[in-house]
Structures are given as C-alpha cells and as structure tokens.
Image (cartoon, rainbow, N blue to C red; front, side, top):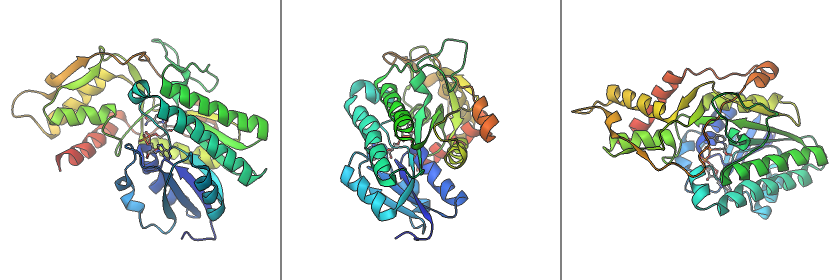
Length: 333
Ligand SMILES: NC(=O)c1ccc[n+]([C@@H]2O[C@H](COP(=O)([O-])OP(=O)(O)OC[C@H]3O[C@@H](n4cnc5c(N)ncnc54)[C@H](O)[C@@H]3O)[C@@H](O)[C@H]2O)c1
C-alpha cells in the first residue's frame, strides 16, 4: 500500500509513451505525492516502460479500464484521490481511420467517466483534473500561422474529433460545475518508450531491418516536434501551477516535414550503425498518403512561456540522436 500521509494522484494511461516518461519524473519532483497508475495495457501500453518505478514506495499500478465505473470509483475511495492527470487514450491516427470505435469509447466515454466520478467524489472540493490533449484538435494549418489557445477547433480525423470531444467535456465541467480543470494541448512528442507504430520508431526499425522506410505521400506534411522530457516538465508545471479553467499549448518550436525527419534519422544511423554498402536513405519509399492527412501543425507557445515560465529546452538534433540511440539498442538486442 501507498504511504497514507501524502496526497494521491490518479494517472491514467501511465504505461504508454508519455505517461511512462512522466511518472518517474513526477515522483521525483513531487516527494509528497503518491501515484496510482490506472492502465488497461492495450497493445500500446507496456509495463516494462515503468520497470524503474515498479518497486517505488509511492507508486501503485492498477490494471484496468478508465471506462469501468465501479473500478474508478473504488480507486477514488480507496486511495482518496485528490488529483487526476489523464493521459489514457487511443492515440494512433491511422488506427482511428481503420477502426474508430475504440477511440470514441476510451477518449470520449472514458474521459466522461473520469470527470463524472471526480465530480461526485470531490463534491465541490477544488482538486485538480488535468486533461492531456493534442494540437490536432485545431485541424490543419497552411504554410503560415500558428495554433494558439483561442484557435478554432476543427478536428479532421476520428482521433482528433474524439480528443476534441473530450476537451469540450472537460471545459463543460469547469463551466457547469466549477471544477478545477486544466487542459494541455501538445504537438508531436518524440523520445524513448514510444510504441513501434509511430513515425520515428518505424523509420529506425525498418531502416535497420533492411526494409522499405514508408513515408506518406510526398513526405511534406509538417509537424512540430517536442522532446518528451520537455513535455513532462511542462505537464508538471501546469498540474501544479496552471490556472483553473485554462488551456495551455505546449510545443517544441521544431517544425519539420516527415521527409526531413526520415533523412535526419537515416544520417544518424549512417554514423552509428553504418551499412556495409550505401546509405539508409536509399530505403525511403513514398507510400499512399493517409486519408485526410492534415498538412501542417505548429504551436505558438507564448502563453505558457509568459505565465508559467515553461519552454522546450531540448535541441532537436540532440534529442533525435538520443532517440535513435534508444531504439537502436531496443531493436538490436
Ligand atoms: N504522443 C504524442 O505525440 C501526443 C501528442 C499530442 C497528444 N498526445 C496525447 O497524450 C496522451 C498520451 O499519449 P501517448 O503517446 O503516451 O499514448 P500511448 O498510445 O503511447 O499510450 C496510451 C496509454 O493509455 C492506455 N489506455 C488506452 N485505453 C485505455 C483505457 N480504456 N483505460 C485505461 N488505459 C488505457 C494504453 O494501455 C497506453 O498505456 C494521449 O491522451 C494523447 O492523445 C500524445
């Protein structure tokens, strides 16, 4: 059992990419907080991601579904939960195109279940509910411009539509019930512990396996890349210091198109694991574009910089080198 003297925070989806980077950091910088990590361990969750905290005295893992009303209610009661950081989601856009149902269930119904149980259990108390969301809720940008906190919502995929719905539910619980909610919308994270299906791990894995490196369309879709540790620092800041009812956008100020990412990863691999003959980039293969593929996302981070003194610190090339090194180790064992 967790030590009783300190407060307990429910973290959902903590065995996924961002959550499993976040939990060790959060335990470290919040010495009086117990973490209860509720994760269903879908194909995207991996308990090995949390080996370093498995036996931590302030960490507890609960296998279960955020949609399970009985279980979540029991967790609030048993651990006297006084804060929620909600990562759990179906997160892969491609899967939302081929089978959207799980996205509706986990991302919308799951968020609703957590909000409703938190509202009931806290019963007017101002405990914090932090919802983790995405910049994809704002749709697609052309060559110019940046998303800001007051940008219009225009989600284009079942994934982003489900996240947008969850954002609106969170917003409504502030407006209607005066709950102490905050929402963060971030750009594409990169770094260790990400699932194999995502872009950077896929480039590395296919490259070193001697396979074609698949790049959608012409590879000119642009994303802003945020190193996951920077994101974790930002989440902790917003959870502890963000103003109730506010939304904060977090980005890395690293806009890159997918083809550039592929070339950068390949040139790091050329250096770290040279081929006997030729270069990894020769394996790049353009494949049929994702349906409804958003062209560009970019974030104006001036609000969180001004109000909470947060900005991403990791240099992109250095972050990418660390990332490639991590997956090289993982894929060559
Ligand atoms: N990764 C990114 O670049 C990125 C960018 C913007 C926003 N986000 C958001 O950040 C959050 C975390 O993203 P991630 O990349 O770590 O996702 P992920 O897919 O790596 O991890 C999701 C985790 O949630 C768990 N989960 C899924 N359904 C569940 C359910 N019904 N009940 C309990 N647990 C469940 C999975 O087992 C997994 O551990 C998500 O809300 C996502 O929308 C991610």
